[in-house]
Length: 362
Image (cartoon, rainbow, N blue to C red):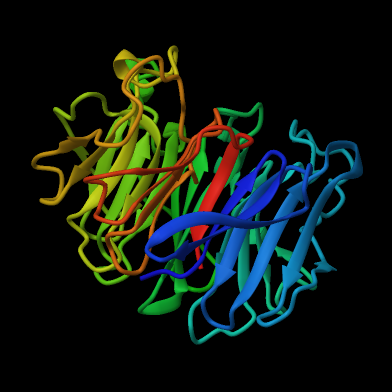
């Protein structure tokens, strides 16, 4: 069972812990400040928090295992845009949108996905960062465009536990990209995805795909799940081919997905009505779970509000712990719920937290 969890919110980073079998809020950090992402690095117990301070810029803080204090470390920095470049994107860091640990054989290695669409690597626990120029300089990157933001962004970084040099990233809007040589080269891995928002002749263009979130099963690494803008897709061959999962009730629209750490056929989603109406179907909160690779789904509502509920779950607002049954979910309306039995019953942690950007187990 997980013994710690974290909520990155618009007004601080909050900690949760179980006490006598009941999860409770236990503490907070950076109170009042927007925390865009949190990472609990299981390799050495370090905790990282990314802050988006607007006029004061993006900050990254690190707390070492056993310490009560935080140390401000480096942040990704884009190089100067070449003089005379016709690139319309501002090469300036707006936000750390995704933060992931490298492989277990790479102590100190971190990966960051940012707005506006840069992938950065740190080899020294965040003290310094390097732009992965091979991805940034791809000709196709000029076709990336904003989805939820007005610029493209990298929100999903899936390191292969079998090979730390194999990394799959999701770009909104820019498709799915895979490197097998540590970032030296990249290839598009969006075959099978269909963008319903594009003209028919461009709907299957890999660069036009808007994956909202991609997760990899740690125990079955070839199995990936994607909550896409136009539905749910699944791959069983490390993204070489994606298959749409259909007939999902109450909806296949959403932003978040979590996959069981050892069973790649089991995944959870937090559905909404549609892009144009970002609320739960019938204003009744639910998660959906498949245990058979998407052949069927169960709507899970027990313990969740079923009337006048308008919560949306962001991309990183749903997580499953290493035990495969403890789930944590936080919403844009400040609702926070935890399930100890795979979503069959949800305990309300709070109904009035700040908007939740990301949740993590420690």
